[in-house]
Image 1 (tube, helix red, strand yellow):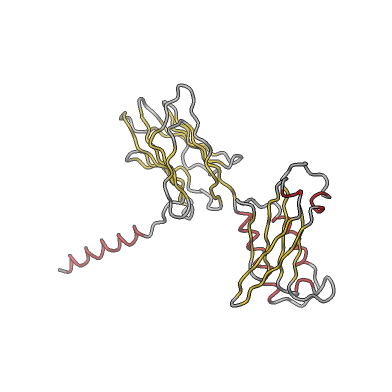
Image 2 (cartoon, rainbow, N blue to C red):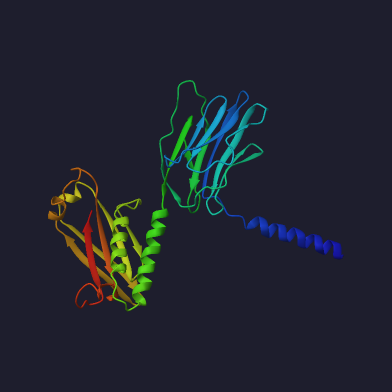
Length: 298
């Protein structure tokens, strides 16, 4: 009886361990017809922030901006159709490929700071066999999206490590203003200017993105050529407890017209800073009302 109890407990613990594994953050699957001996090649391309899957008669080539764990390995000798899937486990930093019943770890340093953008259109090449039954999924929910049969697939990804640095910088600045040192120093103000510069270059999807906390909040707006020729109204609100904090501003088109040294039709950036504390400005100037707003066009 005791042996059975211990065995049952062992199976239970194994089940708990298996269920705790992290789900993949990216998945690409397809079917490959293997008509002759083949091999997998993995290539790191740090200069291109792209994941590429490329098929040929004798090679399944995968490229990504992650350091390699393997470079070139043979695939099973048996010919036929094989189902394969490429997985990225961001929290575990694992970039992995399954091919039939075989498992290949391509990289153990797959940075978690990359997020996905839209995939490029699948490509065909003359005389090159295509992959079939192709689908991909990424992000929350991992909903499968089917793709047409092709020989080459590419997925753009973006490095959001700078976003994490900006968020940390804004949090540190907010913490400083909650408990200022009392010493006369302009270092926090200079830190704010550096953050403002970083915000003007940060990569994000959509037309706007907001960073920070209720104490120090920054919103970045992308301004295309059509919007730069007109006044730009903007309103921001943040609910804190039962109170609503926010501001309204109208940026006149002359701000964009006066910018020099830029390509005429280039995208412009507006960085809006909402600082709900006067501690940062006590050294720089006179009295402030504790809820200041600033905007800069870049």
